[in-house]
Length: 79
Image 1: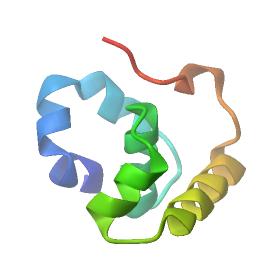
Image 2: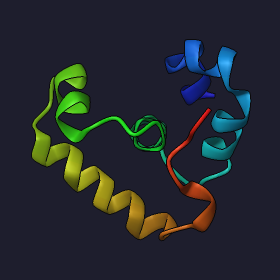
Image 3: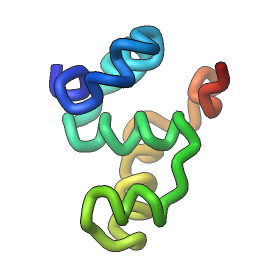
Image 4: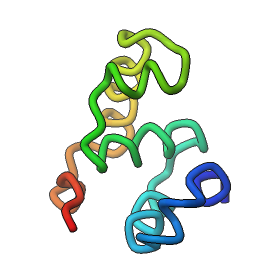
């Protein structure tokens, strides 16, 4: 899928995380944002990496939360 292609290094080390993200009804871009959120990456760092504004990251996060809600299994990933 799109997340596996874009996040290949993450997929190689944590296929369970990617499987959790792939199960969500999100677009490929939203899945990338959601994966970064689960990895506890700050909005500013995501914005810098994706060459977008911090506000755009926060809006994307809001839209994702609206689509999937606040799911208990989606706590930040720790390993």
